[in-house]
Image (cartoon, rainbow, N blue to C red):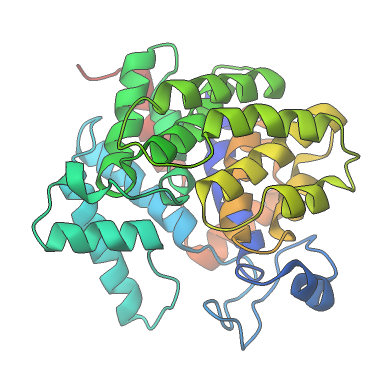
Length: 336
């Protein structure tokens, strides 16, 4: 059961990421004109701003950086060294640039790594990070750390956030996503897991550099009410109009939670919900990846069609089973 939940979370990241790959940075109207709505993996158009000609089922930085975080955690025997994570992110981007990719690091991470290069400490480098970069790659922390040990769990979240998103907003949003994943592995149903996510958003926001802006926990409570009071077909438009779909955590992470609450309240099919996320416009790959991680952790890997998982494995040479097994070993046998 736990293995299925863990695989469901990681495949959920990859599936949501790949569904949102051809629509990322496009407006909702552009997506409607080109695709109608996303219902399956699609090729990116030749003139796509960052994913030109990528084949259907291709993952982007969201999944690749989640794998990077998992590897950093495993190589660190259960701890992430912020300096090591910074080096891994820098190396990853250099590799992507060498391939000619335009799908590079986000604004908070780019700024933080430049500060590190200029001599800042990891505590200083992430003090402006409020975008969704930490939340999009946090699923491995939810797999490896059990919310039953909240101090250890939060330490894992903070270690993963510190170098790029060491802010109340960055840590709070990442803690919320990781907590839903961890609760899903413990067998929590979706409404309970989402409530646990909101609770850990509260716990997470007392850490990091204070940033002026709407509080993640308050937004999570509000979007739950919005989803409960909105018809399923109307929810995507409401999220676009009232929340937004940019890289800001207060938009993209909250939009993902809004769709998750829609699944909980309206019994929307999980794959349909992730396709809705990929059709929103804006930072679609990240919203869909975060949503996929949460829904997959609660529903297990079999909620994602095997044909789609096979496509992800083939197109991306993706082998998540060994990685998930090692993360679960950390969860079952935590290091001091």
